[in-house]
Image 1 (tube, rainbow, N blue to C red):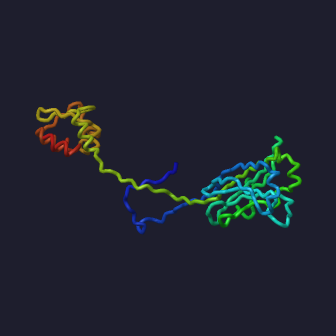
Image 2 (tube, rainbow, N blue to C red):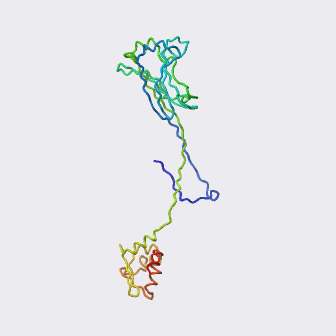
Image 3 (cartoon, one colour):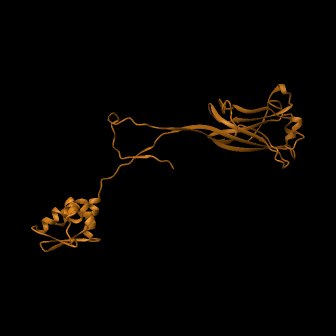
Length: 270
């Protein structure tokens, strides 16, 4: 979950504020995926022709399509079909797609002596491989000498199995995130008025001209410095259960003092 700062919708004049330090972070990482390509009937693929391949199904990694190309008679004429070739190709539109690759010819004897060519887990002097356009490939023209392959544990029941991993390289930059939140107008006064009207939780009474007004000490103290001094100050009334108010009529007390809680409540109650 990303974290950010909350803005209250107010703007600041940058010319009047002191210089500030801003930061951002660039992260380069790979999106990884893999595909296993099983080639059955290997002996029947021999003689297909130099430069001709058997292709895997297309698979997707990092938003791009890829395919494995196996050349049973090799890719280069100069090798005279002495080697099999193995390549991974960009099968979708793309420009300068940077990626890491790993191609593994699986040992089918159970000894796990796989033949691995990998970019992963090691430092690359020139960085990831770049595929310039659709159809660009990375791999080996001389992946395996054909005579050695045909007597190896990689070929079993006329079948080869190739595992290919692709790591598409991507970068993104992140800076501090700001969220604009509109803060609604406070209606706490209305809530205080409703609390007073309900009579719940009152802890102080005022007797004015024979009439009793119940209230909440903390609410009155928060809303009026006069009540704050009277209820919690050094000269507070000793008897706060019922405070007698002299020389004031009840309606006037209600307006001038309880009105500190919530104006609308007072205007509708008189």
